[in-house]
Image (cartoon, rainbow, N blue to C red; front, side, top):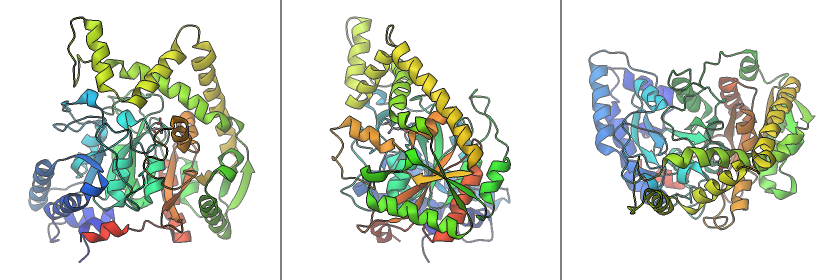
Length: 494
Ligand code: GLN
């Protein structure tokens, strides 16, 4: 039999939840831990694997099933968690030395919800330090690798979570988005990654990078699996005042319905053009053609302020990060470098603890917020952000969904952009605007290049249409046949 890990999540959970079915959570978790042990030496998707805790949780779940208790929709499903989310009793490093030795005292809301639904946390995954980056090379603990080509990056910042799902180590993973950190690695690893509508998922227990942009997002091999995790983690949370419930409105229903009559927006500013990879351009064209063949219509439009996405993002995100990261001072959490004076202790602890990219962002943000410059940079960026939101509302009056590339290029070689911050920032040119505007967007697999590298297509919908978008992802797979395909490495371990 193929590994239970390769079953669709709903089927896997239904087997585990059924006391007459021979498949137990303990077997599923064992299969996941065996794959991790065999393959993660090459991928470095995980920073910490919780063998004992995962086996204990699986045994508990199996006992509950044997006693006839009802268990949730993710019963026995191994879950990998980006290491900027708190899981009680496990290290929480954000891939930073500054948090060395810190252990989370409690579960993030999304973790508590996933566990209550029966998911089993198997470990914490690698990321760019504090989620700042697009390749997972900015980790203080070493880079992760792309399962389709170990010489290439998995994308970032949630690269460990994406690589873990793509390599078949776990069926589901959680990441976080500030400017594309779920969608871009999903695209580079050939899986589905969803950026929820801002506020739809609680941020309680997610280490803050830029609070007005941050959202936790799910990864899966299919849109259905990803939606199963999204449904479990979403909803209002008293511990996050920005969270709220989003009823499934007519916009979501339209996306979840028939392709005939669907108005597909083609935004001039999201066209990759000459700067992107021709195979990515061709993949997007194929997907649009498949939609049109089934009765969808293309609506060409322009959202002029999308051109300002990267500059606005790189003012707003560093500004918020410079404030959020002030708490890492050598006193409250993790590593400390002692000094005779308190100020020197702060400075030395932060100097030793933070990596180069994090320092660059703190400096940029502090500058953008400083007296004399705040009007020129921060306030200007915020007013452009407001205007962008209005342009997005106008765009969604004319179409139901935007379809574009997720990333202008497939996975790039490790080291290729590591020395060039601007080139790295431009990885998110097609994704950051959704974070600035707040709406939901998902990346779904759209085939592979001739060299075998995955390409992703981004579907972006109106606020609150998350589950409709994921349903459209599934419909699109049916229409195009473009689905997750396991990398060769995943077949090494049954
Ligand atoms: N790559 C972007 C950045 O470095 C986005 C990161 C993210 O979404 N967390 O800020």
